[in-house]
Length: 513
Image (cartoon, one colour):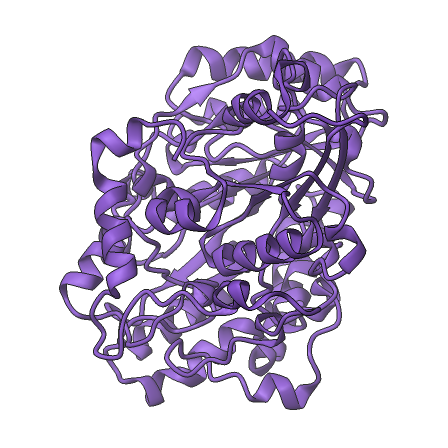
């Protein structure tokens, strides 16, 4: 146990490598990651000093003084941010010797051996595990008696308030990180949800962080709608937005119930309009209803519909992927997608194991490149032939006329069912697809952008792999890329050991490494 005459200092960082190489963060992007605010709730607010930083929102943390402050650095982030977490650990240990480094998230859970060597605590469990670590390091008084998110620490300006009513998902899509972790869908109590909502000082639109707001507990879902309707009718909330799976639309009454409860928008994982591709993603719930019908019914009911499209060059021909995009532009009853992405061979997922067994993952594939805009698997039509399509996913500037025409036709179709704010959000989405800097902030100079290859084998690492200030030689390996595959395309020794360890049931049951 550490002792000190002052309160322990805790710095929580949401680590991030921007996929657009933007140095300034994305303060205007929705949704933001708020995992650091949830983690802050593991500590007793009166017993410790806490600071939080989101690199997604505010850009990379490079201030040398910030790393001299904490007694404990807590890190979280998606798989592509693992190297960044290592870098941040090196900075803290350089400027604050003895600083305890705690890390968690999907990358840490899927890299248990590597994480155990890099971090003092490599968490395999949920946010609530951090309370145990606080007790171990600083004493029982520093752990919160009840883990509750510290939304009060989110000092940024946001048009929405973030809340969570459930965690994980009851489906097992082949490419999803949640599938790799094999965790069961769980719900919070209604009292806990209402407490989150009322903890914010200002009433704003609620954005639910749930991986699946609908879930498999219908009684809880209906009770949740009753609560939201009550809060909406008495003016406590102006409305809400959530992510649902396609089975939500099977019961047509769900749309009306949600609208009556104040629902303004829904996001649904469409991923593809091609049945064969949907089956390959093991998203059979998307085959229950025609995709067009559920989208149209949602929009006609006055609820914004958003979705993403995912392309897999390893199983789709270039012509098929181009046709998928053309299909969307031809149909004005379908909004343009909220995002476009390549499939990512995330560690431990069925998609990862399938492509690995086929030898389809490119040589020298880096975790840092798991951003959805970098080609990581061998395309059917060859790398050189496919790369122009891959580049186009980052910015649809070659389709600006189509975006404009589609937006006009979409407005004519739904102008009576959607409010002007809802319609504006849908139309603005098309502009963002063509010009990411409208939301993502300033990008790199054009000359630097053109040096990106969009192929993991040759994609440059970027400036963050050069230390922002001098660090001891013993931390030099913290600034090296973590390679998933070797020069021949086989799994690297380091990752192979981690993948095997992550699959051991005994290991997965341990709470701490």
